[in-house]
Image (tube, rainbow, N blue to C red):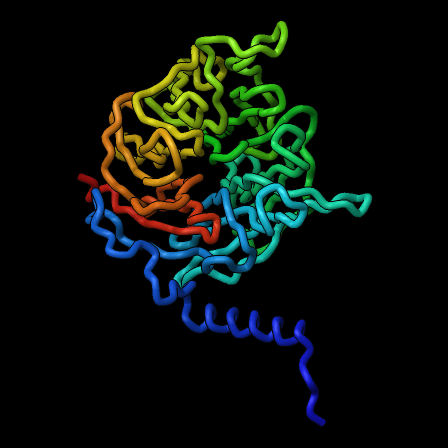
Length: 379
């Protein structure tokens, strides 16, 4: 008997074919249009690879706010939030793994479901490998996936899952204790002594940066005080001279000196320094690079240089650029990853054990892109 397929069956069959195509190809195909057509921008000689982590518009119409981590030499894990649109209740945290065969088909790792049956949107995943303090007898430190769940950035809360096999399987979802939020967008800094310092921020009464510290390898965090406030605490009125800032990345300047940089509403990237390993922080100020109220990320390279991924514009979210610095204060743009009209934003950046730099970012809210840079070839 010939069975007539329902519309749902036909749709499922199409997705199976797509998944088989991805598996056979060994990577996510870019289709007829390359990721960066006619790419010959600033620093293009240093760009070793450009690809999609997921195809455009799949598995969800909208994808944003990626994070990336190396779990073993040559093995990467990326996560992002995706759904109908940012802030919708169907937005979940998706994850894909990359090995020698390319990126795997993505799957949901956090869905925002609540005990009462309701569902909230998920936001801003952050992947990182904890320090040995969190190993607890396991052969390697765990992989942590932090994220936010809640109706909006002003009301969300922090959650975390933990993996002991590089992201193949995950433990139960846990809500963070007390007022801790965990890392809000960018990877935390895992220090040599095993302490983990997370750059975090809140948006419930203006934008405020704070830092959180973990002494158990990244499993739990204790929230520190806001290092500044963009609002007068006496009445919630904006005060001239204060900076509205969120989403810090932490750089290592040497010894106990740390520098955090990130997003503002003031048109330039913020800077704030610590001289005691992140226990206390100085005054927040504005750096020299532009910022169009968009997320950034940064990393201190093995050779001591600092690398920043950001939108080099005061408005919009294109172009997407890479800059390098020897001191974290004076920056030199060296790569233009995207120059066309569109939204290329919310980057995440790491340096892998082979010395290469991996960057993931939002591609027009339709896909997550992945670029690989050889820092030795930067102009």
